[in-house]
Length: 438
Figure (cartoon, rainbow, N blue to C red):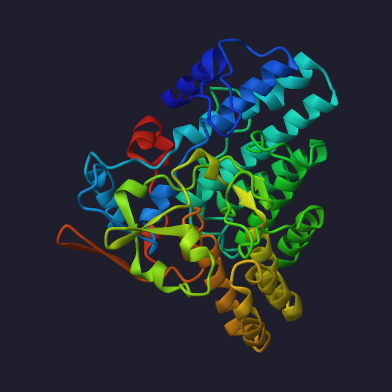
């Protein structure tokens, strides 16, 4: 039996805990075994509230940041920054593992027990649907941290992560293959979608899964699997419900703000290490600083460097938003040879992100691009639009796994093309508690 799973069980059934958030209406579940719909809502809220905040650590591994050698957390981030995964300093922050399974365990309890305890109603159906989606998303994140990127030719044999589908603490938590885990993720999304009945929650409760968030997750999963027709269909369906974008020509609200018109779901703190990092020359260099309206909204000067404005604040938590969906639609339509829709989708986003005076010139340029340069432009726009929201590491994994170099403290770390370190090792604490992860 895995010691860590026993700990999770005790955590969930006795006291699922999370602190109240200033901007997101997350309340503690309390010390009860759930019986009513309200109890199960509290249990699921605990799962949302304890979902890992790991994407800042992923950004440290990318080309988005420079590590501040004078920062308090420097020693805890240095070996992540230089990809020293084999023998990191004991002070190094661990990527999350157990926390994902805590969220999954809560979701499993809702799935297994809510109808038995609280009956079958519209409310319990919504909760059970959310639980399926949260379980799917947790497994999806685990898979993209600790397994190789999806490859149709090898997914049936590539090692994935353990699946947790019941509240049986005696089950064997051995990794399943990438294909098996993805199959379960897709099954959970389908099960969740069949139960969800809420398209949106009011601002402050929009950390919860909705019918639109389910479509956004489905679009992302299909995109990561290279299933372009399905990704396109899901993105189109989600945008048909609400296709608004924050118009930066008239608004100074960040697109990832929880009250943004393009918000879909705000559960995750995507970036919270501003005090330990500066923006890299690479990331700064991909923006037209004069005409791209995102530049002064995303970054601010700190001495001679730039730092991020996009995170470090509960109001800027983000999981899914329309800006990403437009880019998925652009990428997927291009990959299915609908070049006209790819251009249209990309330009719809650019129209809200660059100064109006430049748009006509940009429109002419984009409409002249053929497939290969248009794909490069879409990927560059992903990098600009979604900077420091937790996407860059995954995109580097999906597209080319290029060579990266980081210098800090007089040392140079190099991540080579297709380096095995593009897949994280299971954390040492997880391996110590579960020999199946060796």
